[in-house]
Image (cartoon, rainbow, N blue to C red):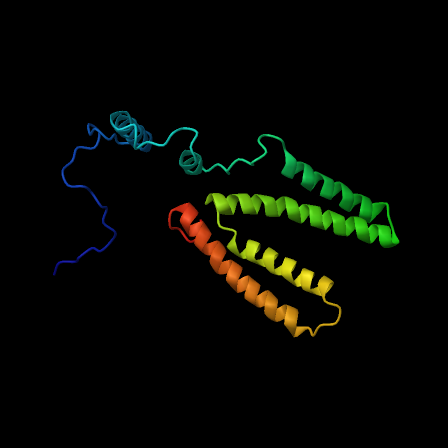
Length: 185
């Protein structure tokens, strides 16, 4: 009676010689061969390869889209000022001034993060649909509370829900167009 041994079988590619193959046998050799093929393809058809400074080349490298104001660190300064205001508000103030400093710090910090989210989303780099829809909802509800004196609580909630749903759908479609059809990244 023969005993059958069962185990994992390795997947081998037929009779292709491993060490003398054109692709190489180690991962580094295969990567190098892949780079060589890509450069040969780019040299043969330069119109199909991305321009080094183009948006598609930057996205493929995994870099964030550049800010519209160039290399000036506006977002970083905004977040830094928010941190300074928060520390001053927590440690060195009291009463109304403390509340004002802390709220100002929260607003500036949120604006710094929101700016990066907007830039990433509309460039098709990374989807921030829920965050941006939530920001639109919070802005709408805040305007309703400030503009209308006496209003039932369900009205801002209902309007906020409609704004969230509408902006979520619209922002999702914008990201799909900008990212080449992907719903998230």
